[in-house]
Length: 77
Image (cartoon, rainbow, N blue to C red):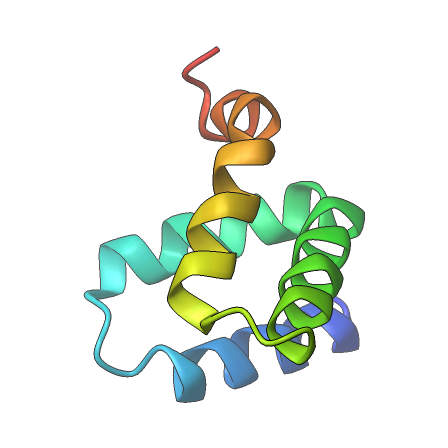
């Protein structure tokens, strides 16, 4: 595991401490497979929330937009 992967896992464990371990591992695996996609998703959510959109709504809309890519990462194409 690279240093970046190690740091990502530690950060995710801290941020997702209330998420069950299995779901946390699934998310981390998806992020490790395509970090550029998750960077793009995060930037778009941040841009929308800075524009005044509620965070939950922005997150849901962006996740809907990238549903196909996320499904492929999850193996549910």
